[in-house]
Image (cartoon, rainbow, N blue to C red):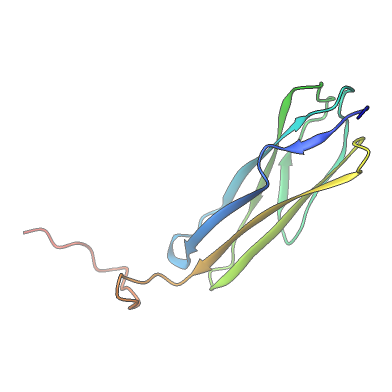
Length: 125
């Protein structure tokens, strides 16, 4: 295969289960590699659903080199499934390559499935 070839270093980012009382700004690096023989030129990077693209390579990524796209987003403090996409358009012959971010947001529970009162701290004797 000739040309530039963008490959993500992992298939997707699974955030696992996050709890509504612990939500912070989610910031992560989406890493990719140029597995082609020509420099990889990033034309644009887009995020869906309020996913902000903080930074991406402006210079060509040389063959064999890794690079990252920095993304940030906030999650609604209610139970829901996380499903976000980051799309990189480049000179890869496939055009746009999509990276998936998944996970879920849940209400906090203790080991018996009972809603926790977060204001109660551990008791020390």
